[in-house]
Image (cartoon, one colour):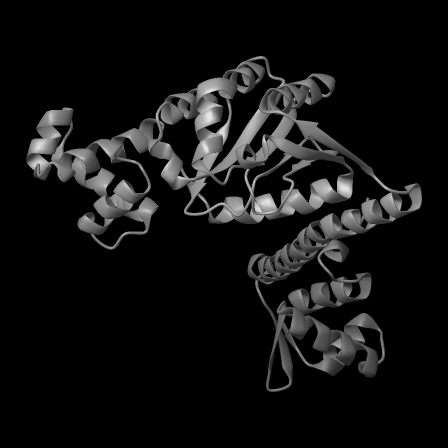
Length: 329
């Protein structure tokens, strides 16, 4: 078995010298050199190391042993600090791997020639293609950004059900970023609620830069023109099958997702929305509490949650921001 003190950073000679200081309790360098039967110069260097480690104190040329619990506790704390720093360095190295993977994929694509690009036509084909890809390698993560009202309206009216059903069957999981303005469109809330209840996640932005999607690690969907939507181009889009393009779009999606706002649906979100709606009708805290069957303290806590979620400085500001985001529709 390894020496536990060596694990903490003390070599066998330092450990032996520390034991000698403990036995003598207070001693000069000469005293300790005699006890160790070592040259004074060697013992002096080791004593300096023990002082730096914090297990021995030096006072007027004499060396005093700290209590072992306190001394070794300090050494252990220093060791833990070093381990934490090493862990942070490892995490940083792991984070950089994503960039290395993109470089590897780019090199592989370059060596293997042009990657596959397929023009796809029609909304039905889009939604069926996604499910088809998911069937081949479930459970597939689908990331999609929707920039416009018309695409959201079509999704709610005609195309949400296959994706919701696929989620129920554990074939895929949808993460979607949509414009906040689309939450008030007919049917959108009901379909998004089902999407979320079956495992999907949805966030909103004031403006989504373009339509795009990634289906798993190797398939991406791109519009005919970046910044455009699908209905204006008869739902024509490109299916690109290469990891490097998927990686770039996933990075973009992650950036947008970090800026986007979660929907206020679910138990906590519904509580916030209810108090905001009743406050918008001019009701006071006490009336809201009676209406909802909760305490006034709970009402005020929900207002505080809403203000925090919305980044609002006042209840009025929270109400305005909630209305802008479609929470009160």
